[in-house]
Length: 115
Length: 114
Image 1 (cartoon, chains in turn yellow, green):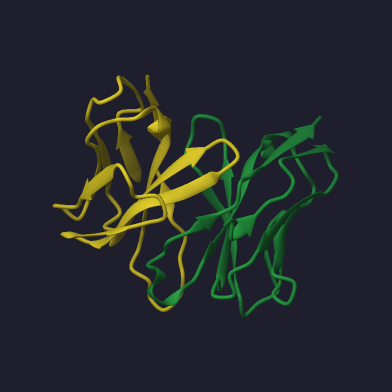
Image 2 (cartoon, helix red, strand yellow):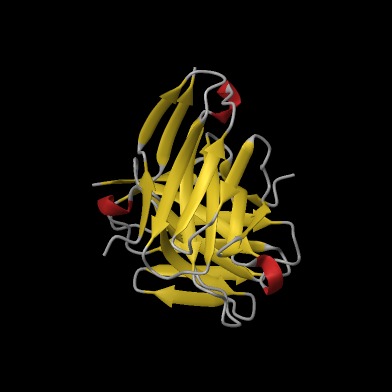
């Protein structure tokens, strides 16, 4: 019963390096999200996807790109990492809304430090 | 522009007493509200939710109250237990075409002392 799995759990990058965070869910959920958590700011939405092959910008999309080639996977890319992207990143998924909101299920997080 | 606010960064209570966590919102389009609990080094886990058509929802020791006119909701934990010590996030969703997107508050650190 894996739920939402994020890879890697920890990463240290140098400024200007690139990396991809992988999120996988095994619940057959339609919707997937990437959030970042910073001290005193709660969680903020970076990008989201409402289905395979579709992505959209969230509240803080600058500096990030995403792709959803398969329904179960949602990738978050940093093309040129900056210290301001030091954060804890959470992936989440939720089922298709059936006329009533449902909760999102979160992964365990990826702690990224950009030096 | 913080649309969901948790104005108390921390709360400390004694085991067995009531814990009350508060949350305010400004966006009138929000119609579904959730509380998440987060332990260190883990992802947030869903705790309880409430729709805007209700003013109260209970689940065991946890009750959420919604006051739409005041744009305020609260989470009551009775009785509080040491295992409840965690960060609690309030979140809101606008329904419709929001596709489950959540707007979170800053979080409140709850410490329950034995």
